[in-house]
Image 1 (cartoon, rainbow, N blue to C red):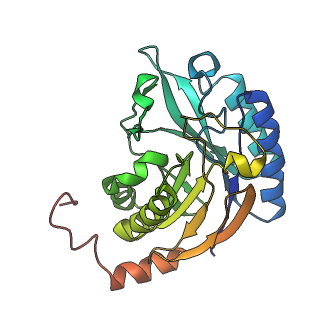
Image 2 (cartoon, rainbow, N blue to C red):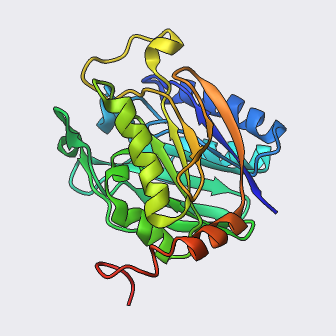
Length: 269
């Protein structure tokens, strides 16, 4: 059976408690739509432009504990971006995945030191590829700037994943929407996986004044098939995208376009 998922394109603010209330409301909407998983953007805990050190909490802290309760109450898996303390005094940009039968986290590997922003000043990089299973479907986790590095998504496929989740808070600017759309489709093709990309909504479309230099989102979340075609897409403003992931389509595409099997550089032996 296809896996029904939801992508919640929201605009978060600087207050983690207020953002939790928004996550609860959106999770309930996703559950009512029959989704088995709802993914929220990067920085769902607090938007970029916020001082991250004072709000960072461990995975057993109150913010993550409340996300677990939200997932439990709704009976589905929640994936949400948060910030956890790093040993060197910085924070880690973390995805929490939690819900019935699922409990894991991913620390963003590739940090956004580009376009005049230096994420590594305050954020420490992760190093581990992370996947988890839901209803027999293996899912890989990636975050925002990771989308520029195809090897991570191929690593998901090598680990057995047929779906990659990509929460993001994409930076605005000339050509950035076009890059977002190109890169997300390319990563689906590179690894022949479903790609579910969920970004922060454009703050202006939410009536919010954004920090001028921080990457606070452009919207345009999408569900992309393993053949690189866009199956569902949102516009710039807040919205809930609900779609189905058919694992058999991955098998069919990989049979036709054997890019994983045909690799000669950097592939599995």
